[in-house]
Length: 476
Image (tube, rainbow, N blue to C red; front, side, top):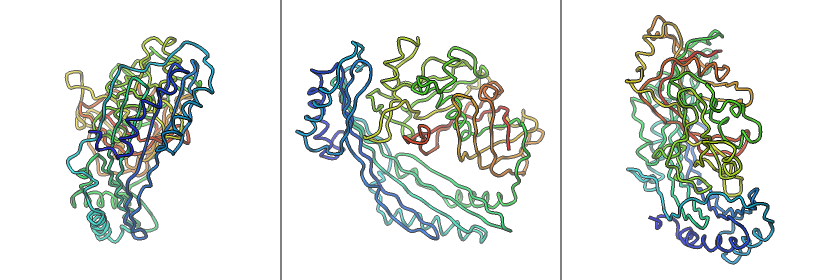
């Protein structure tokens, strides 16, 4: 219901069609996008005990199309209606029409969207949240004297979006809540860290039990005796956390269509060609309920109703992740290209690019040869199972990939041993890695949290995941 929008945004939603109408006599396409983000950040550690509001960041982006490109202007002054109409008219009058090409506006639609949850995070008092963080801190630091620091973080926010292009009038309220627990242990001059995060739309996703904290603490202490892995090529099993990171860094960035247009993605030369084994399927979908990278509609007004299939049965597909501009410029040159809900911006005063949402390897059903984690291990021989991604770096033009995992578990003769590796780096040539995939599980998770940049900037919410995947990679 739109009455869950702040009153001023309800009023602005009703006014957006007037802003667009003021531009349409002069240009073939116009749109208006409003974004607002705010919330609360809380943290508890030995040196930190704070509650900080995330100051609302809101404004409007007004755009027009001249037949060849978009022109935009933006302002944080969203309540002065006369000013907004004047700003819109000035923008429309400043452009000259260069062609009859018009972006797709989409079918007529007036709709509001909201996150669903069991426990409204905004109904939980700061005192209750703080007490939870204190309990986590006390429990973990008292578990063992070698745990010298615990940092517990609770962060929740609400993101409001309004969009209008004359045909569509859309709005959404996206609620996000995250709990992070980070532990640092020290012994004999060696320092290690470990972490756990929980994410969702409601406060129910911030629940962590003492048993879970104990397991995390014990694993942190185990890292003190973990070894560095001997560099070399290994047969590896990727947990869903690492599987998703591989999907994100291998054919995620390189399949954002604007990256191809700039000549920065080698994937442009391999559309319709084999890039992985025939059980490899990679997709991106912003429509999963309440995942960290999920959106109801893109900042171009495209609904998140259909996954974007990037790789199907090992073949790179033409159905890339698009923003409205890149799709408009390329759809008549790339057969099979579809307009997808991937046009996203960091904030109202930033440009829209083709961006990932939730990127993942698809699970492999049992009837098609899917194997459970235990079956993948038993059928493996010697190798390593890597878990807990910490970072990744893409190379869309050279097709290299670098992933960093916190943990590696040794596998010998098809059985997991007690040997643990700490901070495992993974690399390889993307097609070689994907073509080496010979086992995928039928189960599937997307539970990561974080942001993704366009190069070194333009950060947006993103998540990744998938099943357990077995392949070969260089570790170090």
